[in-house]
Image (cartoon, rainbow, N blue to C red; front, top):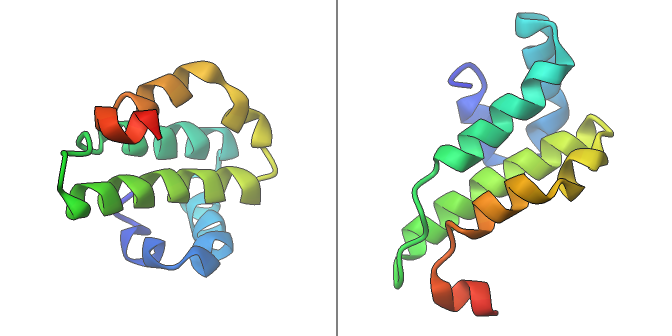
Length: 96
């Protein structure tokens, strides 16, 4: 993912990111799990830490943008990844 890391700053870059990843790795089915793994590896959101919340939000947003661009929204309705990501939120954020 370091290959496209600098492009992840802007959601408008997602189509180009997908093209670059396809060219480099060739398998679309490998992109979604790689993006989900990246989101899962982000540290849990710490209470009172805006930076950790922004980092987490960016990882989740990049994952969802990739899934939508690939027209594979079925990956967004799988419960296990949702539970794993929600568990990274602080208790206060989970209640909201």
